[in-house]
Length: 328
Ligand code: ADP
Ligand code: DP6
Ligand code: CO
Image (cartoon, rainbow, N blue to C red; front, side, top):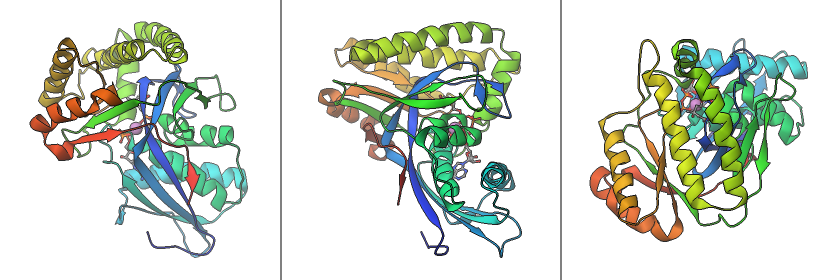
């Protein structure tokens, strides 16, 4: 990445995969969710973002992967930077140079790493020195899932009720060092329905949304107990069930939609048959057709071999728990 100027700040944040998912906002402006969620930050996928406030600019200049960002993304980034400007008292526009080491808008949580990195870089470039909690609160305003990517390892987003008390906290885990997440990609291009649109449709039209609130809360309690006990089987089962309950909200929306494609279903079947043959693994799927398989280090090779034959080596990526946000 080219350096913008002396006062530019660069931050790196990794994506996270939710095991109990966030799917629906109580407050769309502040991004306050209906339910808590819990994720694992991944080492392989991340975003680097450099920000410099510059008196010579008249509007924010946002580039992603060396290209000017779309009008929609630039507007989203500018709205986010307005919060930083308002809090810091800065009035200048900003140059933003971001590189995604993750497919963009494909259901691999680019918005999580992107807004966690942007929160860290822009707040420091504006002269603020925020605590991790305040960084999490700020990242949340860009994309809900980003509040969890401030932290490494497991993180729980406590839903809260307003801007002050809706943020993620790190969840300590012991005995899970050999946990692996295998990312299986079927499509790396952008999805037709963004997470934001998809969850709004689910909240406003799925008759099952109230049931989601109930079950997601129970799933979160159960997952925290499973993590505390380092019980891989329970972690896997809860994650799989919670993912399918989330996707049931898209199928029951009006109009109905799905993030799955044909290969997604093939992968689900294969995970189940691996499990029946004694290879313990579970799947989870975010808002996109790509699948993440939870497993332990000793079974990783067998699972990688199985899926490489179906998807090709380049679509099978082994990831581990990753670090929290950092300055470069
Ligand atoms: P994903 O599954 O990738 O998180 P979302 O629909 O939640 O998909 O978010 C994708 C959107 O996030 C993009 O369309 C873009 O507006 C924004 N985004 C992704 N990467 C970046 C980036 N590096 N910098 C700024 N915004 C980004
Ligand atoms: C399925 O955080 O991308 O990945 O807050 O509108 O930006 P916005 O949505 P986003 O939604 C993530 C949805 C999910 C589940 C999760 O990460 O918890
Ligand atoms: Co997202």
